[in-house]
Length: 385
Image (cartoon, rainbow, N blue to C red; front, side):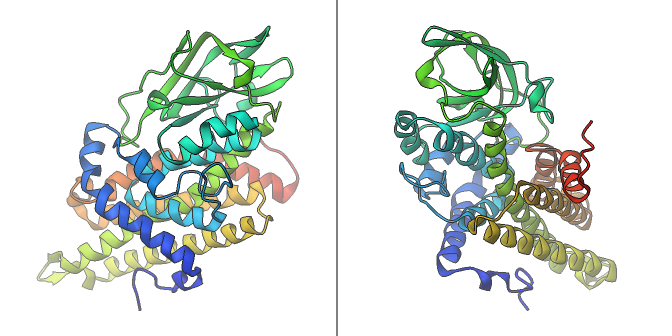
């Protein structure tokens, strides 16, 4: 048996999907992992990532046209899994770029906006961010306080956004605001007067990622920068569904990395004159971790096939995100315990993944919100309020 693919799930992939998996995994192991510990420890972002992922054709790879690869949803998910096996920050950058910022422009933007931004963003030469969450508005985006008021052929935007991945390095920010006609999206660019994006520090999770605030103080945005295709919360929520789908896959990459590290460690670490892999409790932990990783992989693959068939519902994504993040956290914690004191060092990736997964547990919909979404679908009764 192959302990790293116990149920032979890779055999369910097409030749193209396996090639994408191998190509992204090679980049992660050869180019990204050698420097990730330094970036994590220093709280810095690897500036080579955007164009490297552009060269791999994974930025917005599930979109069609405008320089995007036009790959299947399953292929995109596989790429997310391999990226997060490196670090959640790496998959987060890819998700925000492709499933949030690029998808918003691709789905709701004008033809001029698509032609201006998407080819450059797909190549990693331009970076985008997505401004929805606010200091006082997270799980309830309908309570956002950011507003946009039309003044001639411009809009005056006031408000603040919080916990924005790539905000301080972005060339364009997709900012959602309340207007008299409903929630609308605006493409805010650095240099617009009144717009600043200070980087947030002091994080103990996702340290190899840029996280920022977006402050909008009377920013005047041309009407040409307004996304014309939507005037409701349907706009940002459609983007979040795309990003959440990538998380379903991504966290299994992180869980797999923790499990494989624990398995290798247990075979070489000796106590009482025997490798700890020979102990019953160690084998029980490894068996549970292997099962969790394989179950999560199968769940992600099934949802990917549903999405490619046009049958995936948002609440099914909620179940996938809820279950796979929980499973990944459990695997990371079990692996950490198996490694003992070594598990809390950067010599091994386990604590880095565990800390990152605490953020993933919360962003793109908290565990509680996804649980209640599934509960409402099962009972027909909303329990949010």
